Image (cartoon, rainbow, N blue to C red; front, side):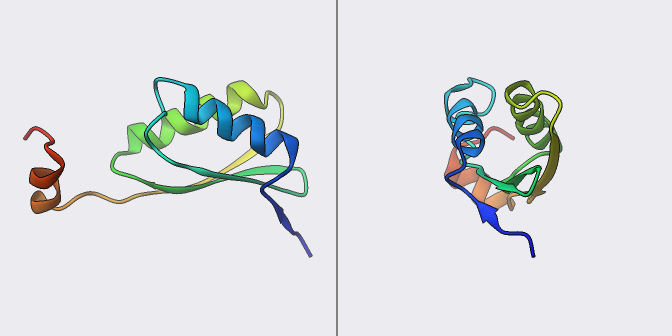
Length: 87
């Protein structure tokens, strides 16, 4: 049975990189290591953001397998208005 390890040094390093990289700083993504796979979890508003998260993680974990379980969840128009996003 596989177990998730959020405190694994590699998970910590990738989480720190995601939090400090200008491309992904605001996304708040969970990172765990499951056996020999880095698993990314969370929600973002666009497929582009999802791809950026994976790109930054790959830069930090070259050669390792990454499972990008980040879901793309589009905001409703009301949420966009309250977030101040442009139309």
